[in-house]
Image 1 (tube, protein in one colour):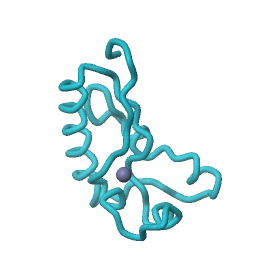
Image 2: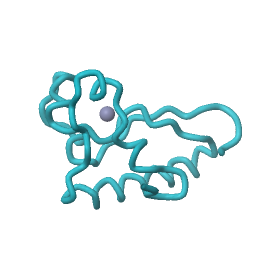
Image 3: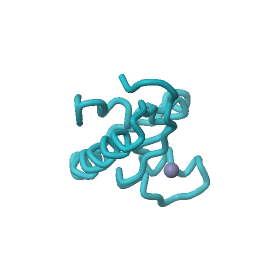
Length: 91
Ligand SMILES: [Zn+2]
């Protein structure tokens, strides 16, 4: 599912930890608006940087997030995203 020009929902929910531990990291319907907003903001960051962005962690369900030590974070609300920016021209 495409959220914005460059970001899909899959990129926001993909987690190797969730796959390994068989954690269902799908976004609940009530948080989809937050994910959409975060994607729109991330597009602005991408534009400002002028570089491609790779999401390392977007949405994390509470169970997945607890593995990181913090039980509640903005990631569990769909309002945070960790990323790195690659070198070179945006794709
Ligand atoms: Zn984070």
